[in-house]
Length: 141
Image (tube, rainbow, N blue to C red; front, top):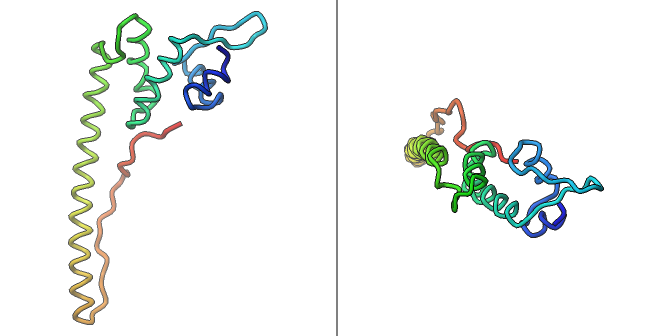
């Protein structure tokens, strides 16, 4: 199938597919006319990439899963390198969850102070502590 058909079947764009190709995640075979050609296995690899991206993995994080599938394994997470990516992502999520809990506690405390000040007729003071880095995950493309 050509790039447009693969993009349509996977619900993505040809631009994204070209980007994945440039990163070496989804190399295309070229026909004599220079057109990219993909097979069902490429669709499977693309769906693995999309599934991981949908839950917050960066593109480079998907590489071990794709390589595992290319090596003939039945699942992208059947290889040690993929399991290591899972472990690393889980640790990142734990840090984010801890930050969010701290932030929630601060906001709740600030709300209580502001409500108390408002009921006493005093102006509230915002005393929230900003984080150096937001916990938003990796940039998506």
